[in-house]
Amino acid sequence: MSSEIRVRFAPSPTGYLHVGGLRTALYDYLYARKTGGKFVLRIEDTDQARYVEGAVENLLKSLKMVGLEYDEGPEVGGDFGPYYQSQRTELYLAHARELVDQDAAYRCFCTPEELTQQREEQKALGLDTRYDGRCRKLTKEETETKLANGNTFTIRLKVPREGEIVFFDLVRDRIAFQWETVDDQVLIKSDGFPTYHLANVVDDHLMGISHVIRGEEWLSSTPKHIFMYQIFGWKPPKWIHLPLILNPDKSKLSKRQGDVATEDFLKKGFLPEALINFIALLGWHSASDRELYTLDELVQEFSLKRLNKSGSVFDIEKLKWMNSHYLKTLETGYIAIKATPYFKETGVDISDREKFEQIIDFARERAATLAEFPELAKPFYTELEFSEENNELLEVEMSQNVFKFWMEKLPEIIEVNVASINALLNQTTEATGAKGKDLYFPLRLAIFGSIHGPELTMIIGILGIEKCLERLKKVIR
RNA sequence: GUCCCGUUCGUCUAGUGGCUAGGACUCAGGAUUUUCAUUCCUGCAACAGGGGUUCAACUCCCCUACGGGAUACCA
Image (cartoon, rainbow, N blue to C red; front, side, top):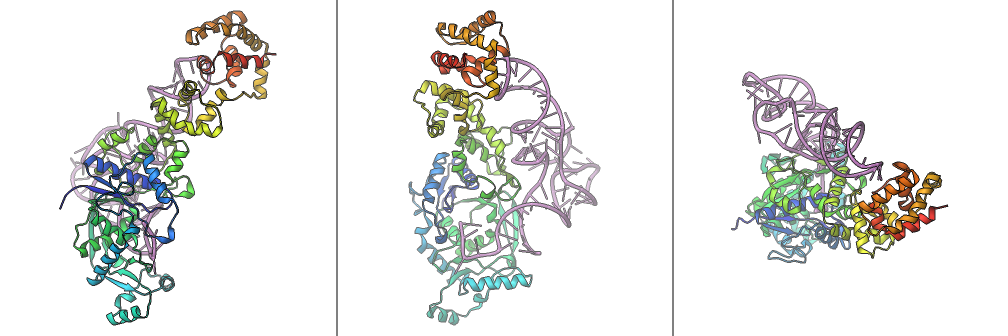
């Protein structure tokens, strides 16, 4: 028996990677890397009714985009495969049979309609809506008869009816449930597929999972899971139930209230570095005040002991701040590559790489997301348009004098740099009397399209003198 | 309804019996900048309430309130 640390991320392929799932996967990854353990990816595709075309591919792609590499799972294989639950159905059936043989599970012939009706009745009486256990009492003969008649059935777990189950969660410590509040969970559906509860327990054991890191929504199912471990005689894993990620109104983060898919955030121009860093801090925090971490640094710092108990609101404003930080600090070349798709959409010509990178360096200083880049860069790529108010400023005599002076002198500049442009600016003041805002605003407006913006040297450096003269010519009357 | 979990600034959080309750985001003000943005500085802002325990409670216990999760042949 090895004491190797093995964790798994076990998403059901619903079509996209939810950020809550992303965080679970991240913690799995961090814990595995931190401890030298293994990070397993297992696809929980046991619900045929919820099959979504391309969902797994999408999941894998999202994981790859944020850099969370797993050691075992789809596409990379491993010694404990297959890693798709839909390919392991015989395993679950065999284990369900064992449970039945051990009298820890039974066949239930109630139809979905009957169950719904039972629940309605219980509700009407103000009782708990739990399976009333009528098939639990079926004799062997009765069961055989129903089977012989071809009645379809499910297999239910036969949980204890009295007593208490106590277990320890690494985040919440001691947790206790009265068995009487635990339902006889369906383990095998009538279509022969297992439910999460059975498949999860069987696979976690068979795959040697040592630590189960999952969302808090599973906490109340844990007694059922532990019961199965006990019947099978297996050693249960350590439990780590993560607090939920919340909407601003504190409900469980949902699609209705905004983006929840990892790919959506990526598409909106958030960098993987920012998303990972931000999500890591939703439920975990180091003992220091430090908040900025690369993935590798998170691996160094991560510890299950510092996981939080309470849910955390996903604050998009802080994500934006963090994203703008990474936009400013990561290498220009990298940001340029990341920004390229957003420019491609607008159809502007970014083939001049030197110019493009200069523009990236300009945009990264003022954007919160990559998606904002094209708009910021617009003055460098497309023809200028002026508002009525701006047109008035262009018409002013002082402005016109400045433009004319520049048409004459700008071509004389050999090299565009702070010194040469400042010298020209000084000459302009001497020749026209324009200074301060009367000097800078018209000029910036004429060649950049806005009175606000970067320094003239930067604008001229990026556009080139020819382009500036062209624009100047257009505003001279 | 029932069961389970949780509760420090608006938000993310530090804090494990003695602190002027710290940091970050947001917001406000200021400095720098020809302007905008950046950057920097300053400020606003919290221990859910009530009982205990203790010389001493944000920290430990109980109750209440509030929030959330689970109550499926979904995960």
